[in-house]
Length: 139
Image (cartoon, rainbow, N blue to C red):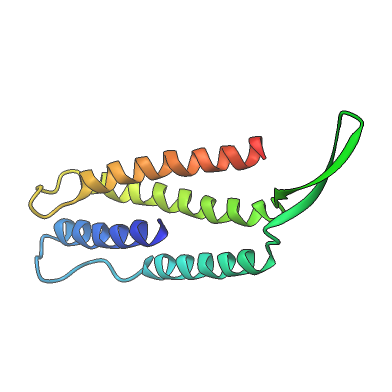
């Protein structure tokens, strides 16, 4: 998810800066937030690796039913904070992408993917919100 959001955000920013500059050769955009769009996915990969190796996968639980205790395996939800942080980063990147696509709304459609970027970013925000709500309130 993060790779798509970052790549379309970078593309959209370049198109908006060229269109607003009125010079089709040069871009007034000077790599200000490229670093953010490159560092955050790397940071997310590091967090996912940490989460993957520290996750047990399952836990043993004991349940009492009809005068008998029995053990069963249940999914481990130990490190949901890491996953919530990863999805929160996606949420913020989606908001940034929506702002960038809104800035490019006046650009002709031949050069611009702002509508598609806007729609995909809105869908991503709904997906990430659903995941975050599930992790916070259900688990």
